Image (cartoon, rainbow, N blue to C red):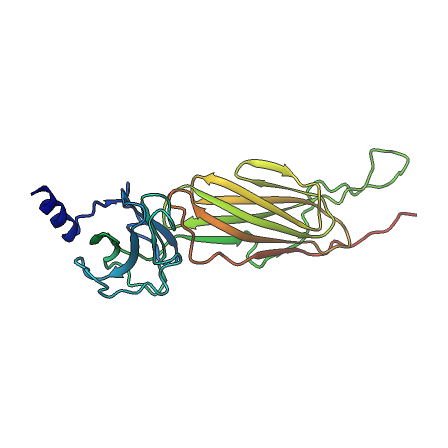
Length: 285
């Protein structure tokens, strides 16, 4: 009787599979994935050495390859051996939900488990792709991207030259750029580059921190994590240098939702600010 029961269990394919526990179902997480982003799905509690196969179906029954085919969706192998191609006891698929996926319609990610000495069994999770409303905008406070040099701190008096207090100072210019995130209120991580053309020393302030830049006429890479709030301001203060036409180009290189680890579909284009030439005034005779 025990042997018969054991055989029936095998033939019926009662293979115990514990589905990955998805703690949340928030927008941008794996059960409501943003199209254009990649997510990892794991089924666990599977005997090592068995074979797995992933496919997507529009049917919640989905036995067999109903509407199968993960072309354009899956970035890891759709098939493999548990514990050999994956960590012990798990079947893992990495799915990139394409921007062509039908949004707001539930589909089902199936895993089929089979192997020598057992029959096949299936498990699945329902997934609803949604549009990615996570965006980032970058703007220069001077809409046309140009400005005359500020005269803040200008010291114009150079005579009498015997008085050391009278030393010419061309002053400083201040530039302001705004990063604005939209789509959710989660914390976020941001990387961007500041590219300077010009020889004036400058400092920048972002998220309340002043940073002295020891190099100029080059690139400074900035990385800030766990930003709260959706609007952040970058302020650059640069020493004026007569005769030069300084430029500062701000280029976002990465923005990531710190909660869901997703990214916008597109990063904003670089923004360049040009400070127009301050004329050189020669010596006094």
